[in-house]
Length: 293
Image (cartoon, rainbow, N blue to C red; front, side):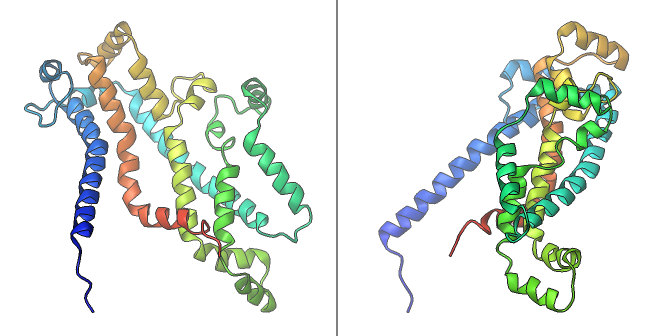
């Protein structure tokens, strides 16, 4: 039997479509303005006030200035290395912690959970953390980018909820066959946890990519700055500083507004390119474990 659509149902569907199109436009149009504002000539930018839907001119001057200044390549390489090293390290420690949290019969399990909850809501503060960094000789080193944020309790709890959806019978069958806990984790749990692992990996990657405070607070060397810290310095630079940079790059300094838009494009483009490849895992990883039967 074919159910015919009622007039009310058709109107409701049309309203939903229009609402979704409006939401998409509200999200996408500002990005179009930013991209076009970074690619048009300064004359058109000043004439339109930066509100450019269809550009009439094209000028890559902003990106030429950012790349020819010299430091952006080192900062970009540092940010990429931070993700390449930091995300696998964070996932290794997070998987181990989340797997331990699923073992309710493990000695000290309740104490571990209480300790992790306290860690998630309280910390020692910025000044004690700075002294600890200096005592551990991590100040001005690459380790500062990957070790302090290697484990997030919140991400471990998310992965813990995902691991709880895997039937215990699989692990019990493996133990009967003589498999050890590392073998169970590597050959059974991890292959079944790819959506959750992809989701948490994306969280860590975005955090590493967007973090600019570490480069300012714990790095005194100009050459040890991630991309976000470098671009923030470019955005907040005064006119005299931009003129000095332009002399080093042998280019005329762009106006600050177009420089900000170019910095936004450079910082968001890599994440936008990676996100479609992990989107299906991202959605599934967030939903699994949220519904209890």
